[in-house]
Amino acid sequence: MLPALAGAGDTVLTAVASRDAGKAARTALPYGCRAVTGYAPLLALPEVEAVYVPLPVALHAEWVEAALLAGKHVLAEKPLTTDPDRSRQLFALARARGLVLRENVMFVHHPQHAAVRRLLADGAIGELRSFHASFTVPRRPEGDIRLDPALGGGALWDVGVYPVRAAVHFLGAGLRVAGAVLTGGRDGRGVDIAGSVLVRTPEGVGAHLDFGMDHAYRSSYELRGSEGRITVDHAFTPPADRPAVLRLDRGTTTRESTVAAHDQVAGTVRAFARAVRAAAPDGPSGTAGTAAVDRSEEASLRQADLLADVLCGAGRDLARTFAPPSTTEYS
Image 1 (tube, one colour):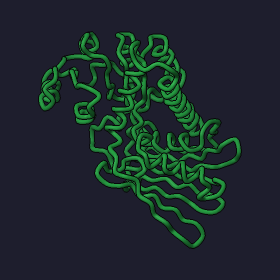
Image 2 (cartoon, helix red, strand yellow):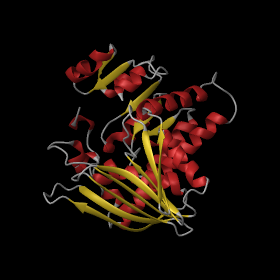
Image 3 (tube, one colour):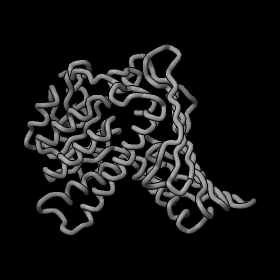
Image 4 (spheres, rainbow, N blue to C red):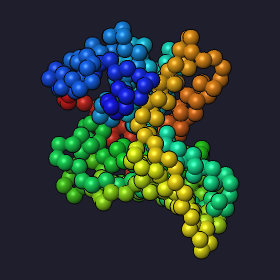
């Protein structure tokens, strides 16, 4: 994110903050920006218009709220929070203060997904029957925050967000969890290491979503229809320097099409910057900017609701998923 913020052209990297002064200085040095010790002092800087919040999941709500109350626009790492009601409160606070709040789900900014939607709209696979998405990554190193339940660790919040958001992206509103399994690690760390979820649309289209962080790498989705299927590999983390490949199978024929290489990280930063400029008092007038923000918020809240339903379907209590830590527990 730092290279994207520094190089996107629509943003100027002004400052980075850490609890540890040395870490802040080392991080800021390559970018020639200000190093700040502590998050609150950064939020007090008048030259800072917007902040990116990359903290562990358990601290998102606290520092997103603090940033909004300080009058800053916010790009927050996903998931925005682990509680849909809390997410709704934060979006409401942003709207009340005339600020932009975006959840950093980067893959939706890659044009390959718009190309898939066009194929669906053109009837390339007939009527949609099912959706299948998978995001799995290799084992995390010891000490990784994703293995700490107190910091909101676990596969659902880290990698499960991707297939869940993809289901929202392609299947729309009204998704319901028909069944969910969250699997803990054999080492007893207290976080889920893998999960598998079945969801359905009101019309009966089913989706199978799986994710994990002690697995062989996989990042893909497939849409199956009455007359064919569309497959996308490297769906969630496509290389910025290589074209994306979409595979369409229909009958006995297979056709591949390419989508130009695209840096979805930079694309996310530019989309956020455009939203901020549109929200400014002297920014573009009309409904285009507002509509774009509303669509982003709506998708984030659908995702939040679905993640909470996955926990419920797996027999987990949302309120006891983790105990938020003090901000002094990490830098």
